[in-house]
Image 1: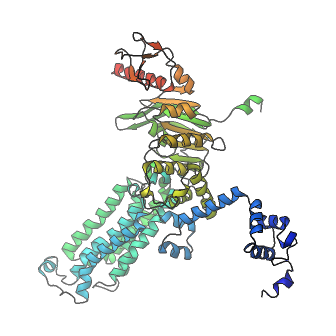
Image 2 (image 1 turned 90 degrees about the vertical axis):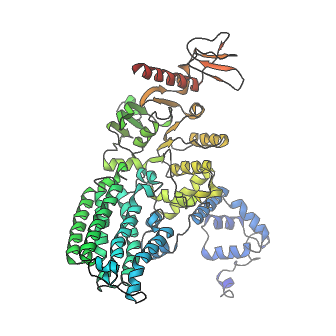
Image 3 (image 1 turned 120 degrees about the horizontal axis):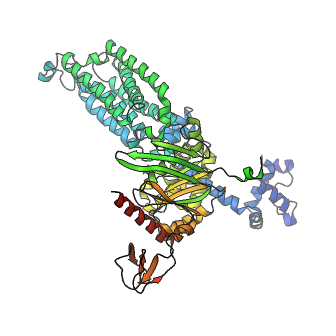
Length: 310
Length: 297
């Protein structure tokens, strides 16, 4: 291609510029610096500049040093800000706006340490049940299993059913409780919608906890619908906590939601075994809680715009 | 519209009968205040109500009673509150940081909260405030690795994002060394656009150096509003220098010249009258307020 280039632009190469001694003329340098030169001219000027020290010196006289320094600072600031982790890049490719991804960086329940903790807890509460399923350890009837109501195989699900939704709740609570956001006063005093901020963080925290929990449920003994049945209680619990936070102190709302899940699950596990907490009656109750909480949240979402609520 | 109407400038901040209680403690007691554009220094001891007042002005806290107007906008109205926040830069007294963030990433995060959603626009703003506060070389440093003074400068930098019209700075010079304090004064004095700046401080010399207006807040009440010169003038004829300490003085301390400086109504023996400073005026006001409160009990 380069062989035809001089024909297309006769002055494209060193030695053929119209300036004195085959150097780039002042007018051409000025238009190059101002960005008004055509693409082909820019190429040829740049090709010449790589070889000609005199023209490089001449170029510096045309450069706006202040603008150059400003651009350099902007580039350095942009580089220092970084692109975020793999999750952020993945979400970006999925169409999540770049500035929304920036908000997620301050969500504690999306940090690696938190996610590893979630995985660790899940491994503990689901590990035994999974081991039973795959025959690595013998299934009941152990003394404890028998005492808990005659579910010698499924009783091993109880810790997972209790803790799984609570882990999801903890992730969402960490996404909106002021105690987990050291810079929350800045978020309060900023014009960005508090409710939007809450939803963005809560939805991502919810997804980040739900995925491993549902994944773990596939490994456990019990009915095939168990992984799906874990979704509604988790969603209802989080929606309840968010809705209650528009009425009471956010921390009290999260703690109340946790208690409202833990107490019935423990009582049912002791009296009837663990599965009733995810069977149809419980699903209907969770659906009702989810609907009412969503309505309360919609009606009172402006409370999250008030600084003293966050 | 006559000439007089045209010359009237809308007060940046107007506060009427503002009250706020924390349990039995009355943090703000019927505070009335009008702040113009320019720098206003808020002077007062710990527990005087400075932080409470500033957090209410920043729309972070809610008053129990009274009215606040910022650029004519009422923070009780949702839309107007957002508009106030768009014009606001706020440095809380104890600003927490996401310590795993780099300096630039933290500023980028705050810029998003300030609705600067365009990435290049944010980078330009971050670069601008980093240069203004002298932290360009620390852009990639994690916040946990910064010294206390650098974190304070970072706090000031985030408040400057978006070129706010109202800058509320709660103890901005705390943790800054003398050179940084001078740079901070220079920075505030040179901010473009004639913003309204309210800063609280214990440092009377900060007030004297850069604040055309000063407000003294004591026990939740405004005890003085005026210029630093007027505050200093309240102590005129009541500040003395002597070689010996005098027990009758309200306050006395040994100065750099090794002489005792007395603030009080009666001159100590052999003392000479000296020109009062802003600090003298503030200390006298503070002493009078304490005496008044003790008398009321």
